Amino acid sequence: MNTQEYINQSEQYVLHTYNRFQMVLEKGKGAYLYDTDGKEYLDFAAGIAVYALGYGNEKLNAALKDQIDQLVHTSNLYYNVPMAEASRKVVEATGLSKVFFTNSGTEAIEGAIKAARKYAFLKDGSTDHEIIAMKHSFHGRSLGALSVTGNDAYQAPFKPLIGGVKFAEFNNLESVKAQITDKTCAIILETLQGEGGIYPADADFIKGIREICDEKDIVLILDEIQCGMGRTGYLFAYQEYGIKPDITTVAKALGCGVPVGAFVLNEKLAENSLKPGDHGTTYGGNPFALRAVSTVFDLYDEMNLVDHVKQTAPYLEQTLEEIAAAYPAVFYGRRGKGFLQGLLVNADCKAGDIILAAHKEGLLTISAEGNVLRLAPPLIITEAQIDEMKEKLCRAVESLNK
Ligand SMILES: Cc1ncc(COP(=O)(O)O)c(C=O)c1O
Image (cartoon, rainbow, N blue to C red; front, side, top):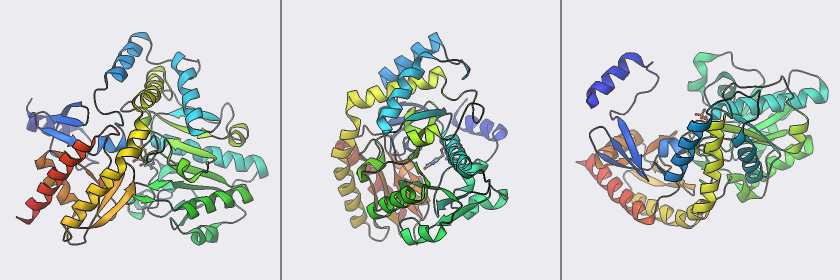
């Protein structure tokens, strides 16, 4: 089949929930992807902040091939060999106490919500607890995760969603306080809002929320699905603020391409929430997924990946600021942390048009809410590749003016 035939056949059979870009990706190496026409793309999207190690990491591939030959699936009725190591590594990395493995980020959010509700139920036996979530947040598309996603357009056709969810302004502590009642059981937020437009939490805001949660025994859920696993220059973004959540959710780079997520609980929540029979999954945490998780943590250490992000991020930020300054008619600034950055696009231009022009130049980027061009490269990118991104993006922007 040629490229157009792959697209046509897929469109014939796949439910049309995405307006996909007209390319068929076939293979990848390092920070580069190749389509079925052999065109090379420098990837500053990383499968939406997933492929931290870059494509085709030989050690990850070898571990996965080995695991396929041993055992792919067992169900959660039994222990499996990678479980012992992967669970220890996740718990130690997050500084929390116990982990539940899922198949996706969305499912990690579902589990976190259930754990918080169960904790509150065990305290007072009532079933009308409330959750405070943030406007412009994104936590996933299942009904529970969608209920705490602050985006009217995503929610509207699927109402009624789960009850008792209130929305507050991100980075506005007073707005959160105004929503708190005796029924509040959890506050959920991304440590750095990704889909909503690349907004890092202010230190005062996140520390203030931690204090309120401590004072009122409210469960703090920090969603690190996009911003965690080293992307901000800290293994988990909350570590920069010197605070810990009661529950964190992780996915995306956790498996570096293998679909796996997790919610991780501190001791208080682990001891006082979900018990046998309360929650489960057939696939979640199977040996194949957990071999990926365990190997990913080893490779992060071996490759010093988080330090690499911390050291290289200033160069990325400076480069993006140079791009923004060079094209003031297109960009009005930069926002973000580490390797999760946004170029802010002026109202009379469209981030989507820049993305398409960049494809022609061999560069992949994505967008975020509010006309933001989002850059979320693999964590292995070098200064030379940042220069290459700049050249390609500048050519793309110039091509729009022609
Ligand atoms: C912050 C955040 N939470 C949750 C999700 C949902 O994760 P998944 O798509 O793996 O279900 C995403 C996905 O983009 C995300 O960015």
